[in-house]
Image (cartoon, rainbow, N blue to C red; front, side, top):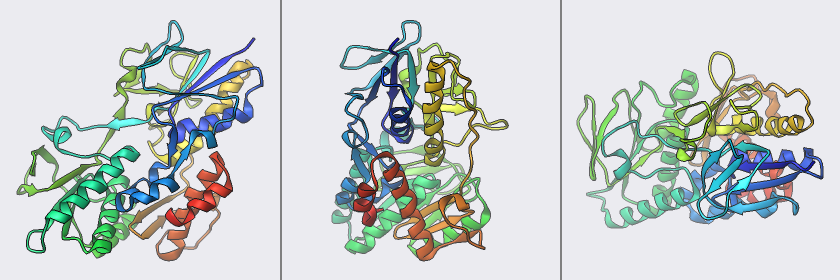
Length: 389
């Protein structure tokens, strides 16, 4: 009997699951890949496009480089999931039937009910977002003067916020643009929840790059030209970029599946409350005991290989594998600089220090991205992208 396996999304979760399924499924299974774009974006390198749009060709990869000829690709927006009829509902095409489906659509931006924030901010969730930030920053810099520089505010000092601030600083320096950059974080320190050592190392790089850091005061309202804080004075902005939170996609609001904030809850085997539906990446809250797996590229990358194996096992009526997230360390870029922290030998390095920067950290970040590109395409594609990573 031919089984219809459908994968939703072209991010780390979706592209990784496709790569695994293509090598694991029996030849009589039909594999369908559905996404709203016809390329995979190496999202943790998307901030590079903020500085230089020409980088886009090195961080995006056509689905033709990833999908086998036997894999059907459909470019369309997923609007729902009918678990009773086993149909993926699409915006512009006829629904696609499935026997098993892997949901890896990623996330959308969370605004936490802050008045005006959604209306007056840009986000960084896609290639188009990165291009829009670049164009808006460029336009603002052309209108600004040394006496009245453009005020650019990045809300949220997690990974995306820090790297976006670093790229805008590089753009400012490369173009001698009159720009002031502010990085705003509601909690006490940037890169919240991480070791103080890497927090300080990143703060040092940001301050060396001329980024003004504001912490320990949440945004309470955003307007067209300023943001207001719980305690501090308002901060003017010409451009506001919000990177402060994620939530699941609205497409599954009506799906008969257990979820929290639109993220499907799953066991450590990625199976949801429907045995035919698996979920990974930012679309899922994967049980890992005390807390779910983090919504990171690293976690999605690891999970994609196991979820593909588990769908193949489900078809074969074999026991499913249990996945346990392994934190292999953190590497964060600030423009051309980078900081690495607690990197394990799994990344091919073993150093006697927990936190390091300079050329070793820069090279390691490139290697991580190159390894991912090679896994889903080829080492030749990774080689061509190396200079932009």
